[in-house]
Length: 181
Image (cartoon, rainbow, N blue to C red; front, side, top):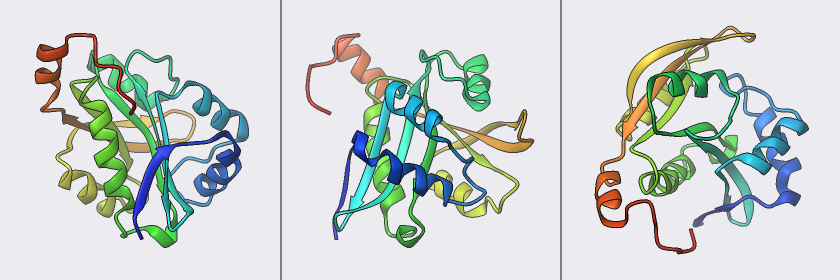
């Protein structure tokens, strides 16, 4: 019953696409080309396995990336250095079972070594209370709202300070040890 978080494998992209596009209105749909772009360019693209089955995925980008999301651009206009969670999807049968918490622990461990802030958004027009409570329990705070052009979806923009970032920078500078993630 353990949850394993690991890098996505190319042969899993069809399953990831189906999981994304069955997630409901809280996640924008993807096509194969966009998912392939994530696979080739995302700084962080990991999946969760539970009992040997795909249970979810998370995609993220550092602020220096050329990611073209309007919400990413909103953060980039306001914050010089952050790690952005583009999307997290947990299979409906696995929601409430700790997969989301495992992802956020993993992505925070990744981000806090590299960026002073962790950024994401929650869509406001689709029953956002559970997602807002989830993010609040992880220390995120609202820093604004953004209406996404083209899809007219209002997003609550959330940010969390990475408390370990300063220590890591003071200790290692820009040269992190070459350790496997």
